[in-house]
Length: 296
Image (cartoon, rainbow, N blue to C red; front, side, top):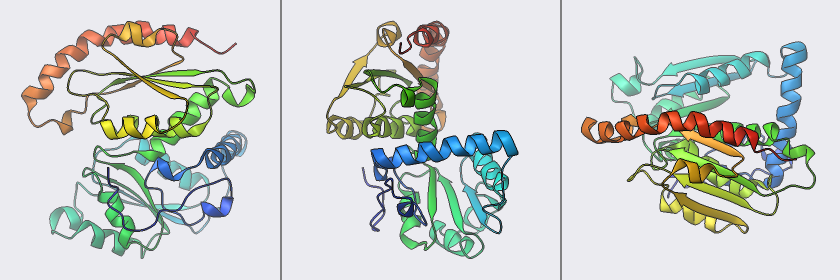
């Protein structure tokens, strides 16, 4: 699937300079070594916040957050991060009283104007490929916080780090095969699109990575995501119709909601929602099974 950008995207490696001033549009920009660098910095930042609450290394830096879709955690986490490091935030509610929403201004013009005020922009938009179009015209870094049913790279970074940290994969030199179950709306869930791709290239796992897909009929993982993962050696993909089978010997159960806003009609959503209720209680039971499947 196209990212809608004509710019050559930077490859983010273990060389810190590769990250400086770079936009992040897709997890495919990040190498395994680059992810290891990011995890080291993440651990340093966690220690900094726990011991000192933050510092002022980003003093006089302004972060723009522009959200054309609802957001609580993503928006709040970016704003908290810049504040903890001494910077400031300019927030634009794209759904509310912005020129783009009310006056017909193009998305590209809105972001070009905003970058005159800020040093880096975080953008979420309901249309896939929209962030790539903005990257084409902006001179300052743009971070993709979700573009329709496309990708959500920053969420995937958090998810993979959580797996890495919770399972203590960085402390296990004798890494073992990793089994991850992805459950829910895999067609429209941009978080699982990014997660499957980033896990595949991350090398936090041992000999093999097994991705198990469990989705309602019609909401299966898109073929282009499967093709990407297929191209990575030692990555296996499996499809399950029952949650019990999918969770057998799994280490991680990742559940994503049914994306109501992506359905063409309320009737189509309601048909899936009924099946979701049936699965809901089973998720609680099976998550306990994954919790007990730890690396020894």
